[in-house]
Image (tube, rainbow, N blue to C red; front, top):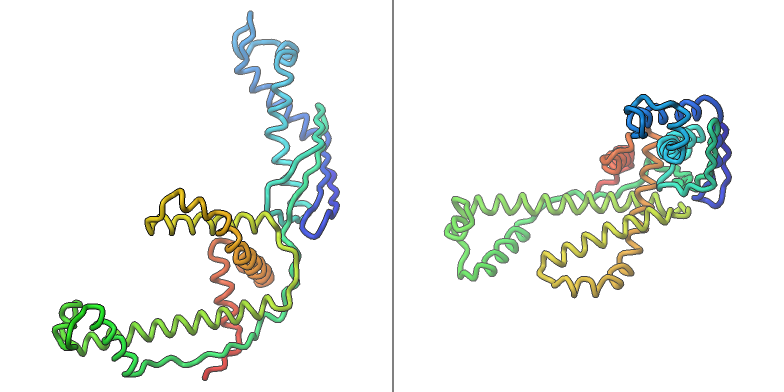
Length: 291
């Protein structure tokens, strides 16, 4: 196999592929054998027609089948050979197939080269979490107002499924603690992300941005539908929602690509759990300033 890669721009590559000899020849043989077994040719039982007659009647079908089966295999072999990190289906062109040769061009979008560095030891300012009695009191007062009752006592606690007011206060204390702890963690993660992105400038693959935008738009429409908004009203907001979500979609793609670059450097599996695993790695390697 001969391959040649031309750089069209930062994210687009043109791959020229040529393969000759036994690979193509054997594929034609395999396809014609299958066709011979199934072909219905007057005067012959299936599987017993002479090869020259089968080729005469089914050369076009064989040609199409060889292309259908061989091009994807050769394409995948070529991108692996060239080490291309392809992120979108290719545009195949200039396909030429003979009995012992195949050549084609494939235009592909690849993941950008991201030189991410200094991702270990990122400084994190973390505020120790605690819950005051006033915070618990405000939470109870909020419950009191929402249920429109005059006093806070064991009766309020029992109406909410707790034996007494003391137990309710314990639960509220724990809930507030978890909420504040989660907020601190989110702040730490946001700080790491902003630190990673601040000095990185690379062209985003538009196919990924478009895909992310469509997914975010789909979810936004589902959320509106669940709130009872009519389908017609939702579709009327399509353009506006696209404009509002486009920036966030681009940012999410950028974050994902940067996390992927770190994952490759640190041999972290590029699966559905990759973003979480990379973030956990970054948190472990960070410099924590606990206040």
